[in-house]
Amino acid sequence: MLKDKSSSAIIAVSDLDRARRFYRDTLGLPSTEDNDEMSVFKTGNTDLIVYKSEEAGSNKANAVVWGVGDEIDAITDDLKSKQVKFLHYPDMDGVTLDGDTHRTGDMKLVWFEDPDGNILHINNM
Image 1 (cartoon, helix red, strand yellow):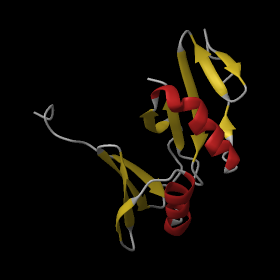
Image 2: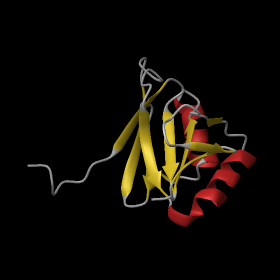
Image 3: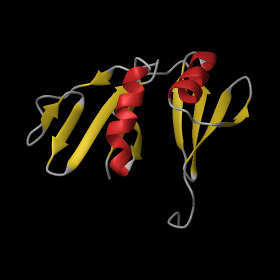
Image 4: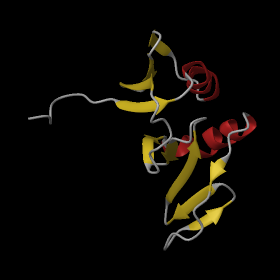
């Protein structure tokens, strides 16, 4: 039924202007649509929709994941230069923490939050 349909990530935020600055300026995503209630950002071949909601930041799991391949270290460094604070999960079985990067085998994983506490994730897959 949905296997041939496109999907988009959607994230609730409390302050749309602050979220626009974060997703546009910090993450470098181009905005393709803006109005009083939402913004749509282009990310690869998909859209990331940010909308105003009183429920912002209530999700305590990953909201968005990006597979960035070999660029993970450069992207992590760039985010760090923009004062993004990374989340650390030192108690994950089979995972070691190297600076801000979690490692398991050849896989690298990095987590951080947007201004509302939505958890964003990049990995080298």
